[in-house]
Length: 415
Image (cartoon, rainbow, N blue to C red; front, side):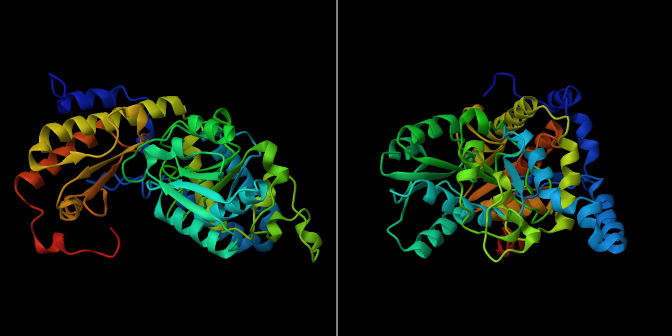
């Protein structure tokens, strides 16, 4: 803890010097709300509704089926993929938008298995988002061909990569602790052992400085409804390293991935490149919303974004330790800011009730069992004053035991 603790005036000064301060005005931030849950659902950019309305009323309503050509609907997944690619260090033609993380992950599990057919061990870690593990379990059981899903602690991943591993399936940023895997080191270790890598960028894209090309990653998936602000259930994305693209045999082979989809052949022939990883017709209205949301990213320097992310997290941790440590609140995850993503999780024995009290006070975070309060810091619209005010309200709730009320203790369906 610093000898001269942070004051609100310090936060205001940081906001005045913030290169992303102008970005905040491009988002619809509800009056009086401190929104620290962009790691679950990002805030809506203000211009998105008009774009969706145009896609619905003009394109769907008036142009109808002609919109596949006249408004470029058919090429949206590839165009959006290239826009996302710039943010994750991927070259043009290596990212496709569409489907969900789970569907895309299943595709890549099949692709990786076929590229490394002599091995049967899939390596993951216990910090992976459980849904990814469920998909891998389903893939393993469907094949019924001796595949094993090996799950180790996050810090044991490097040592667990040996010559039995077919491929790794790792989420770069732990959804609980924000622990950041060293993608370059893990990938290099995997390749040295003859294994491939699949990375989940759900808590990385738009929050950290991802470099898929520089890290030599083989495959990646990610979502767009968190830091990229694509909207609830927005299409996910999938990455395949360029030199693997024409070797990939999709586990889900649909007509949008066919070499000639409108020839209506009865047999599947994969399209060249990333396109073969498409499956069926994509949700165009959701694609329109995502395409619009990405406009705010066109001039964003990812190194500067990462610097602000670390500063926001560091300020929050410092203030929490100063104001809330006496109430048994502890910080989860690495102390080194460069080793964590863009969220901070706090432990408290009544974490669920405390989070509900915070939400009632218009400070929005979320809860992860068994006792973890999670706060996401999205550099494009989170201010340092938000950080200060959120911690002050948290301290007030803890000081007065405001959380100890029936309406805050009762569990809701979504936490």
